[in-house]
Length: 525
Image (cartoon, rainbow, N blue to C red):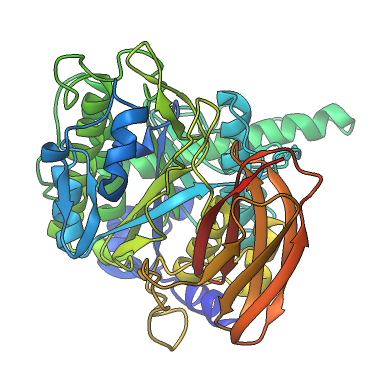
């Protein structure tokens, strides 16, 4: 038994032989067996495709952005600066996240996407939630596979003394693909913490048929009974009387997100051992009227970001006041970003790469990656270059937050993805934090000639370990992988024939563990 499972197994306690329905009284755990060492992930999903260029604003690219997105660009004077990071700022609605940045509780990951991105809301959401390749259909989500690894045989035998609470809780929406495993929901969906359901003694003692239908009915009964028991423990945890800080109020989407995060804080404080909470904010599909024409700091997108900002900032302050912030890691994502060029409807269309936020007292603060480089010949088809595969973000969370071994992380993600320097791994491994990639001025990658007609030469610097060199077109489609192999530390050179590619803008991408760089290249006839 490894250290992770040993600690979990030895955390079980009882008081005077008391038995509690569902094995899960929050009061019981508060008195003796509550394990505050369990780590929690809170996922904040932004439905619709968030405009990353107006969220994390590359001020060093402001001149060209002004010319290609004049209808939506945020005035330079209104952009919130990030202390210690020149050339990058936040939307003026994100003052709370700016404060978290200053406190070392915010990490920004630039240019997150995947090869050959899909621009359908439904398919792109499915890819992000399951961790699939662009041409792969999966019937399990990345968090669902993680929970199956931690709690095999679920739902049979659950709840139990080792895990008496829901494995995951979705607040304010249905349990989506991310929290499913082979068609089985690994989470419980709630809107609030009230529990009017009581199925005890109603259906569970009737004999089951020996036929196939009996097995199916048995599964239905198991799920119904779990729903009943989990409703009890959620309601009990919410009644523990924790003193919360203020949250946004009202009926706006941002206020609803704030109330969902308040429930998360309630349940963590109330003693639930739930590992994953999932909340969401809708409305980011800003094809039209993304900003007010007279003032680009106002409008639909500003209102959404203000709601996101207020909710997350209140949540983080609440966790700190409750003494829980070291146990909680938060992550935001959207199914895709928006195009570089704005449209004539004062909006932006579906794009590819986006920035992600990770927040909490255990993040490695700062910005991972560099500001996106905007090509001088940007067109309506041009997308932001991918710097990091979203599954590398997941790998970082699984490895450095949930303490999986590398082979376990590969098992959950169904492939090998390089973890990034996002979460302090203290408590998982006995070394300091990973090297942080803030070295935008370091020349790790050069590609010449540009423009080119047939062949390119790629010079790159490796730090040891696996090196990935790829070429993407301007839409984000992977055209070729030039290298994917362990390399010795030092300077390296490779040559590639790209003569069969059509003329246009391309991106050459280098990733060496947590370090990456992207270079634009232009192919001419």
